[in-house]
Length: 461
Image 1 (cartoon, rainbow, N blue to C red):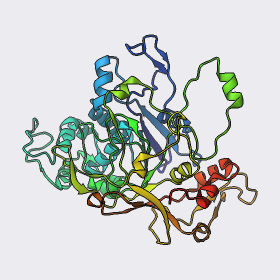
Image 2: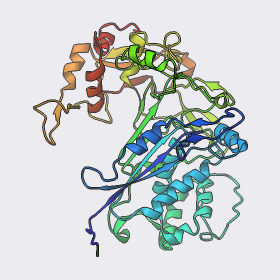
Image 3: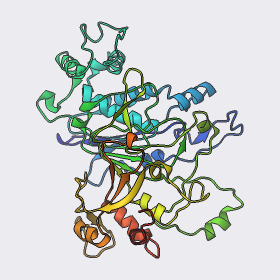
Image 4: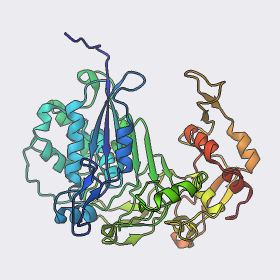
């Protein structure tokens, strides 16, 4: 009989795809807009989910759950309503959360990955873990009513259709989650700590979300989410994109603005051999930015994003207030500065990349001011080909003060827009490069080195 180590753990990886993205079948069914159907190009979330080994290098078994995006149903009504308005997102949140509840045992690691509305799904699942813990088998029998309660804790005059499920006299309003969670614990409906409540807090190991959207009719105001986070990475693209949906920026999280998400597309078969043989390898930060081609993205309109300018949203009306979010810790990726400085190309290589999201109200400058970085600036540089970095010791420590002195200080984006619209935090700090991206820069910096060229020729100051 097979025996298992009492300390054997597994890693649960939940990958939530974006709007209209479904890689479950690999084929896009014929529709009015696409009457012939076609082979589907894997999305970035699909590629990520397929890249994980079934057993990690440290021996940890990895269980991968891929979830297709909203608007991927079999009917045109589902495609339009799910894609444009986010209908069905609550069901996706419940499914992802249920998967974790059903498979988690003490010691397991939880990793959530999402793009677009899938990013909202991933963050909401983490929020549910922070507010509720992980429901037990008994608790899952009441899951729907618990989920509806959680959605409406702060909804004034909410008419609860299940007033006695999972228990009567439910708490409502601010901080309702604490009392609610305690009552679930008393009934044995949830798990918050390991080892039957005597061990460590059940946490989320890592959350990687890209282009998270909020205008979908479901919202979690989860201040307690940070207590279960081990690591959270967020990426936004700064160029305007189709769809009247804005990125949801939450307070007290590490956020980085990334200028573009690379994604391959099918070229005309006759041009492939010529194109591939002559297309030059582009330096770091200068890759092609592809514009969304699907007519479905046109339905909801177009909006330019506003880093550093996001405001609180009224949880009842869903409308933006006049109060700025504080401590969002938004960071600008260095590739934004590099692409602008060397005059990189715009969408589909048409014209120059102008980045109106930043340049409308912000200007680049340098400062000797010090900032608290989520990842210490004393970075680790990774190089698998360095003979001095062998075995497990494949990192070296670099001193950031040398770079600061060399280039004249930290790069920041300073608010220069109308004074009456000025945010409380007038600076957006440039994010230091991490070890893997530093290595990527080393491999693809070009000649002359685009990173050094941008630092020496600051055309934006």
